[in-house]
Each structure stands twice: as structure tokens, then as C-alpha cells.
Amino acid sequence: MNTELQQDLAALTDSVKRFTLERIAPQVAAWDEAGEFPRTLYREAAELGLLGLGYPEALGGTPAPLALRNAVSVTMARYGGSGGVLASLFSHHIALPPVLRHASLALQQEVVPPVLRGEQIAALAITEPGGGSDVAGLRSTARREGDDWVISGEKVFITSGMRADWLTVAVRTGESRGAGAISMLLVPGDAVGLSRSALKKMGWWCSDTALLRFDQVRVPGRYLLGEEGGGFKMIMGNFNGERLSLAAMALGFAQACYDEAVAWARQRQTFGAALIERQVIRHKLVDMQMRIASTQAWLAAVTARADAGEEQSGNADWVAQVCMLKNHATQTMQFCADQAVQILGGMGFMRGTTSERIYREVKVMMIGGGAEEIMKDLAARQLGL
Image (cartoon, rainbow, N blue to C red):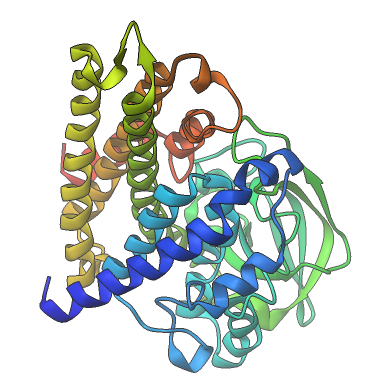
């Protein structure tokens, strides 16, 4: 990492840390209990430049390497301690890439700038009630009628699904059952025939998650992204960025658990001494730090390769590294959350502590973007095993 990038990274991290500690951390527990966070947070994050980081200037963004974008995820996860906030606040990071890469310039101008200004929300809709990672088997359909597409089907576990003003939706537009018949369409949130139902979850309480129903939803033909039948490749490429972002978030959450565990161990007195003086506690903290350090180094290496162009080229070894890193990072998060709750004891079981919240959020991180088993199988194929 060159000196200029190091300076940018330090300045950005400091700014994001202050914003997170001031505007997010004090409110997270209340937002969790309320089941949502204020929509005004989108505008506040946009004013700081966080929503537009990595997007073209012509669309209201600020071009930036993944090293900076992942630093935002790590920092906000560490000092905010809420996957629910990050999942919804940045849902456009998985919804907009297909628009940037495959939509017309006119459609990009219509959709992207208001999202980056925090005025509108974008969500990605792929998963269906009958299947998760099996994208090639999705059943939602879109048929052409004149100049429009007419969409029917259901999507589930859609982050920002209740609030989204724009939905990037995977549909089947051909007769075959394979990947070649899948396309991507944009759907406005106010489209006639679109209905939404909120879902209750183990974690990410303040993130709205929805079941979406498309009942003969009609959208203009110009809302097709790229070529008809080209959706599967878009989705697979999009997954790589999502998985790398999840790894960065998992690292931040692991660090948050470590921070809380250390602080508690230093002030908690048992049998006449601070917990930190107990060898068994120090060993737990070292075990946490070992996993955090390895995840941090691996994330930096994979990110550097992405910024060198391997993400765009779809290099097989790089894709395998992303899959394995995602598993390793979420396992690190799981281990650190478990150890932190154990160190906090009864307090770790109480709602309101960072470790308790992250403990509840571990499983969605291990499943979202592709479950561990899927990641292992995909990595094996990429490595030629």
C-alpha cells in the first residue's frame, strides 16, 4: 500500500469512526428494539460520502479502491456493532452494480444518483422461497408483452425489501430451466402488483427484511439490465463483491467482541482480582486475537488482488480465495462472539451488550451471500479439485 493510500485510509477510518460512535453506536440498542433505524441515517451517511464511495463521479459518487471501501465496512462494524444497520444502509452495494455495468446511461442517471444522495433505497432480490444458492433454479418469471415485461413470482429474505424504492430482480425470461434463461430487471418500489411482508429474524432486528410478491407486475422494457438471458453471469460476479464485503464486516464484528471482552475483563472483579489477571481469560483473548490477525491479513491480501484487477477478470484462484476468506472471517466472528459472551458471563446474555447482539447475528453472516457448504464447494471447483 503506497503512502498516499495509507494517508487516505487513515483519514477515512478516523472520519467513519467518529460518525459511527456519534450517530450509530448510542442508538443501536433502541433501533434493534424498534425494529428499524431512521431513514434520515441514509442522508447523513450520504453527506459524509459513505454511500457514494466507489461509484463514478458522473453519478454523484467518489471513485475509490476496495481497500478504502472495505475499511469503511470494518470500521463501522467494529464501532457500531450492528449488522442490521450495515446490511440495510449499504444494500445498494449489491443492488446497483448490475445497473452500473449493464444499464443504459439514461437508466443509470434515473436510478443511481438519488440512491447515493440517501434519498432513495435500492435492494437486490434473488433468493426465493423454494431455493437459496441455487440461482439457476429460480422460478420467478418475466414475459414480454409489447414494450413491457410482466413479472410473476416471489422473493424472500430481501434486505431493505420493505423500504426499497428500486429492486434489482432476477427472473426467468426463457423456457429452459437452466442458467441461460435468467435475466435481471429493475422494478420500481411503487409498481402496481408488488406487495411486501416483513419477516422476523434471529438477528439484524433493525434491518427490514421482506418477502416480496410480484403479481403481474409490469415494468418498461428499458428496465432490462444487459442482454436477455445474461442474468446468471451478472449474479455470479455480483456475489464476489458481496462476499468480500461480508468478510470485512465479519472482521469488524470480531474486533468489536474482542474490544468489549477486554474492557469487561479489565474492570470486572472476581475473587479479589480483575478477570484479566486470570490466565484462562488471557488465553481466550489471545485466541481471539490470533484469529482476528489472520483474517485481517487475508482480507488485505485478497482486497489488494481485487484492486489490481482480479475481481473484474474473474480469476479462478481469486474467486476461490474470496469464498475461503468469507468462511474464515465469519468463523472468526463466530469464535470471538462466543468467547466474548463467555467472558462477559451473565452480562453477555443480556440484550444491549455488543457481544450479545453480534452473537445473534453470526448465523446470517455465515449463510448470507452463500452458505459455508456452498463456499467450500465453489472454492474446490475454482481450484480444480
